[in-house]
Image (cartoon, rainbow, N blue to C red; front, side, top):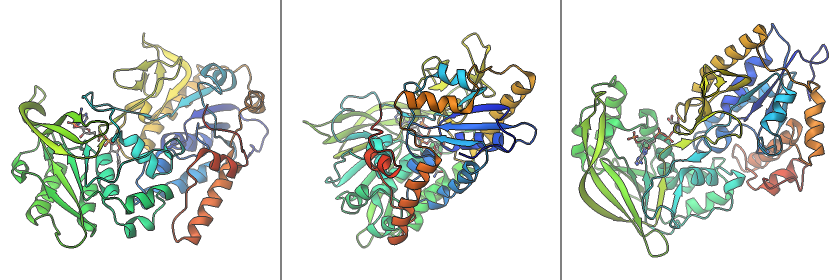
Length: 469
Ligand code: NAP
């Protein structure tokens, strides 16, 4: 562990979660010139970087380059990584408040939203969380099985995650082979029988959440043909309440796809079809998914001048063996931390955790998706973290933070060792990282990921330290 030049730090901060929000919080705290602050970053996984490692699609390597910034932060004096530590069981909220002046929750959104329709739990119906985790080598999902023997898959949702899923189901072996996609997924996706992926949106194309740069990627991929079901939907105008330019760009791209007869028709292309104004109402099958029932919607303007969908009663049945829902995520409640269950976020003001009565909880903060909900790109977390860090520093200066009864930096490690927790520290993680990169070099890929708990912990030098408790 790196140590501070003048002995112990003045303030000790625990950050729970090592994704972008966690690292964008640790960075400014460690580089703060006015105070001496150490930061311990906890993660239940033996690997850091959160969604940068296990959420960003493998064919988006540029987005993953931000990990270099996180590694720079991790090399600063005062930083420690506590991987393979589950906050809530290995160490509790109360434990953290006994050891740190401040605790920042950066736990993201680990739950997927459900559709709440019959048949949703049939084999062959999965959440984006499972599929993304599987192809990205997240150890919780390495044993998942997806039936890729069907010819048609259906992705429900119109956000950027839905586009990631549709692309990953359609990329060729050549497209995938140069990425860090998990080895177990590479073969299955390359050999998949899926020839058509239907992306279902409940509202119109102008109301979709996916963004035009991500949509435009389909035009650049030779292995994918894009269609728009019933192109007349492209005549709908954007919401009067919206600025319009991004919506118009999206519509223009979709018109190009539709007008070009699917852009390209020849060869062994896989097809992505956008189907708007449709809501799934049932998933059916004997003992696995065999079809999905979609209901046609119409749009109406609500009081805030936003187009909403309402059902028309017109049903259509689409045969499929695989349904993936990408309808958003939600956060998980941490025992004792005030939680707004309706939004799936921690109750907070400017990053300060607040009780139901609205009063701040001394020394507790939050950042990222668990603070603002599952929206925004990786960079959004930088601005968001700055707000939380500003509040935290102001509280330290005002002396209204938490007063730890165990401020010695070694005490938390001793506690975890006494509880039998096999902590994966920064050095352990670097062993995993070097191994993956070396295997990647040999295969002309960015890295070849270790994707199972036992493999990761053994590479870290912590065999027998998992699986998760
Ligand atoms: P999202 O952008 O919030 O999209 C969720 C989609 O699900 C919306 O189209 C929503 O439709 C739909 N939906 C919600 N409930 C539904 C239901 N019951 N039935 C049918 N559709 C339903 O969420 P996301 O795609 O999970 O993405 C999360 C965040 O990560 C976003 O900010 C996204 O931009 C970001 N992200 C970025 C990238 C990238 O930069 N390349 C990649 C992936 C994710 P309505 O609009 O009608 O509610």
